Amino acid sequence: MFVHFLRLMALAVIVILAEYGGIAAQEKDPLIPRVPVDQRAEVKKLTSPLSVTKDIIAEGKMLYEGKGTCLNCHGKSGKGDGPVGAVLNPAPRNLTNCEFQKERSDGELFWIIKNGSPGTAMISLVPGAVNEEEAWKVIAYVRSFCP
Ligand code: HEC
Image (tube, rainbow, N blue to C red):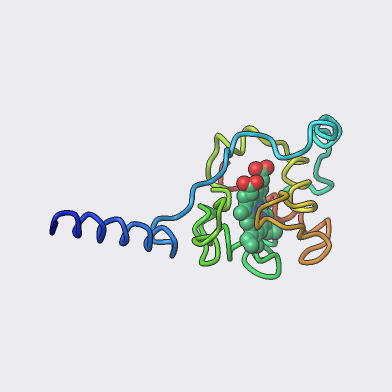
């Protein structure tokens, strides 16, 4: 009887931890493309209009941590561990995952910032938070996680 009670308590603690972010939600299939298949070929061809320099990367960092709001979810480190990110399901992408970065073209990163990922907290941030040029600067910064 007492053992049964202990088991129930242990289960309750696990559920509470999971609910309140003590056990963070998982990312959903980070390597599977998000751009719809009928647009993918076109989107993959998109390239940055900027030539990436140290200054562009520094501006991208300011935008990532500032009005782009990326750090709230993806974290200052980019690992997907921002204060808001901790309670999201699916969890924000770990942008420092270089296997993920290799799978995505710059155009796909741009597409997701512009269109968001339907059914997730990754909403469209262009033009609401940043304009297109600023989005490319943020991408230059994100790429610097995997030089
Ligand atoms: C409110 C939380 C939130 C904010 C703010 C946010 N993201 Fe996300 N982001 C997410 C979540 C959640 C996912 C995972 C979506 C999925 O699994 O499809 C994601 C996914 C991504 C991905 C991966 C898309 C892919 O192809 O798999 C990229 C890149 C990304 N975000 C970049 C950014 C950038 C850059 C910013 C800032 C301009 C930003 N995000 C702001 C929550 C957020």
